[in-house]
Length: 570
Image (tube, rainbow, N blue to C red; front, top):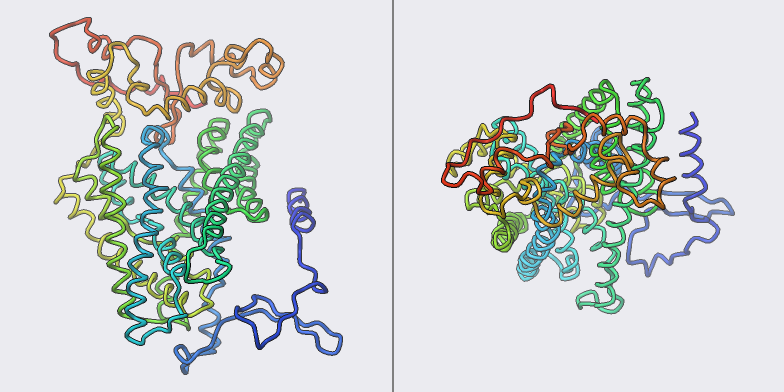
C-alpha cells in the first residue's frame, strides 16, 4: 500500500500534464500532422477525442470496423509497458557475467557501431527502392522521406535470435559464439529502441529532403542523453536494492524479499518512462546490476524464486508476442503489402548484417588475443533473426501509410527469419563445424592455459586473458563496489584510504569480515549465474609450469573445476 501511494504521488505531481485551457488551437485547413488527442469546444463544453487510425482507400474493405477484429487488436503500448520489460530484464538478469565482461569490447562494438552501420545501410538501400517505387507510380514523392527509411533501418536492426540461442543452449555450443551473439542481441535491442526515437524526432527546419546539421546533432545528443540517463536510472535502482537487501533482514522473509525485488526492478522502468527516458534500457541495466550485486544478498529461497519468476514471465511474454504476431497478420486492419518494398527490405537486412559482422570482426581480430574465426562470423551472420523487439517498435506507430507498410514488412520478415533461419540452425552448425557439447568451465581453463603460454611468466590468467577495459573494471569492482554492495570481497576498511574510515565501517557488514577471514586471498567472479570462487593470488600448477620453472615439459591438463564444497554464494 505504501509503495502504491508513493508511485501514485510521483505519477500525479512529478510529471507535468498539459492544461486544456492552454492547448494549441488548430486550423483544420492547414494541419499537416495528426494529433493524438483532440479537444473539441462545443457551446462552452470541452469534449476529448482520441485518435484511432487513418481510414484510406488502400485499407477500406468490408472488415473495416469489425468489432471482433478491433477487440483482438491490442494497444501498442501494452507491448512496451507490460510485455517487453520482463523480456529485457530477464536478458540482463540471466547474463553470464564472466564471459560477457571478458568480451565486453567486442560486444559493445557489435551493439553500438554495428547497429549504427546496419541502420544506415538499410536506410540507404530502402531509399533506393522507395525512389524506384515512386518512379513506377506505386508511391507519391511525399509519402516517404529519407528519415522514414532510416527509421525503418533502426527498428529492423533490432536482432532477437531467441530461437537460435535456445538451440545453442541445448547443444552447449562454442562459448565464444554464444557470448558474442547473446551479448550483442541484448545491447542491440536497447540501442535500436533509443535510435528509433532519436530518428523520429529529427526534424529539419527548412527542407525535409535536405540534411540539417543542427537537427542531426540534436538527435545525436538526444540519443546520448537518453541512453546515459536510462543506464544511470537502472543502475541506481539496482544499487538501492542491493543496499536494502544487504542491511536489512529481508532474507528471513523470502516472499517479501522476492516481492520487493520485483517492485523495485519494475520501478526502474516506470521511473525512466516518467522522466522522459527509455524504460527498456533502464530495466536492462537494472537486471544486470541486480544479478551482479543484489543476487548475492538474497536468501537461497529468494534466489530460486527470483530466477523462476522472471524466467516464467519472460517465457510467457515472448510466447504471447509471437502468438499475437500470427493473429495480427490476419486481424490487423491497416496492412499494406508491397512486393517491391518487402523484397528490398529482405535484401537490405542481409547486406547490412554482412556490413556489420565481417568488417567489425576483422578490426576486432587485429587486437583480440583469441581471434573470432570465420565459421563463428558466418554463424553470427546467419543468426541475425528479427523478433519481438522489431515487431513492438513497428506496431507502436502505425498512423501513416509509410509506417503501416513498415509494420507489414517487419511482420513478414520476422516470420521469414524465425522459420527459415531458426529452423536451419542445427544444419548450419554442422555445416560450419561449430563445436557443440562444450563445457564453459573447461573452456575457461583452456583459455587460461593458452594465455599463460603466450603472455609473460607469472601473469595471472584471469587478468592476462582479459581486455584492458575489463581489467580496470574488475579491479575497481572487486575492491570497492562488491564489498560496498554485498557481503563478499575484501572489507572496505582494508581497501579505502584511512580518511574514509567512518564510511568504510558503515558500508562493511560483520558478515564481510567473517567471509574475509575464512576466504582470505580469494576472489569472486559471477559466472553461469553462480558466485564461483577462484584463487587468484595463490600460485597454481598451470601458471607455475607455464612460467618456465619446469622448462621442457608439456603444458599440463586443465585444472579441474573447484570442488563443490569450495563453492560459496555471497
